[in-house]
Structure formats: C-alpha cells, structure tokens
Length: 105
Image (cartoon, rainbow, N blue to C red):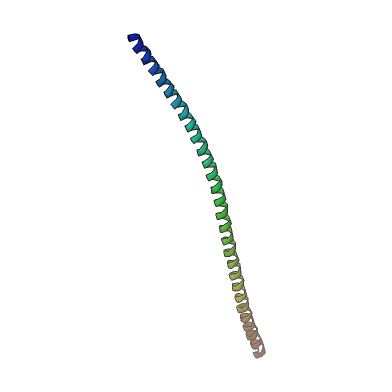
C-alpha cells in the first residue's frame, strides 16, 4: 500500500515537473517573441523618428529660406533708400560748391 502511495506521489511529481518544464518552455517562447516584437517596434519608431525629423528639417529650411529672402528684400530696399538720399546730398553739395565758385569764395 505504501508502495502504491509512493508510486502515485512519484507520478504526481513527474507530472508536476512536466507541467513546470512545459510552462518554462512556453515562457521562454513568449519572452523571445516579446523581445523580437520590441526590437521590431524600436526599429519602426526609429524610422518614424527619422521621417519626422526630416519633415521638421525641411519645414525649418523653408522657413529659413523665406526669412532670408525677406531680409535680402529689406536690405535691397534700404540700400535703394540710402542711394537716393546720397544722390540728393551729392546734388545739394554740388549746388553749394557751384554757388561758392560763382560767388568767388
């Protein structure tokens, strides 16, 4: 009778060991799959970040070009205004010089 109980206990232990081993095997598979999925997600996120970064750079480059063009236009306007003012001053100076020459001074 004790032999029968011992045999049943051993069968139960064997069954428990098998269940534990199967559970460990399944857990390893699940962990491996999780690692693979996480690696795929990381790569996907890296690609998305690169794409988003490129879009941001392109947008900022367009903005910078517009700003540069605005600065160039404003500089040209300022240059034209200064040139006009300079011509007026030169004409006034020439008139003064001619007047002084005519007056004999």
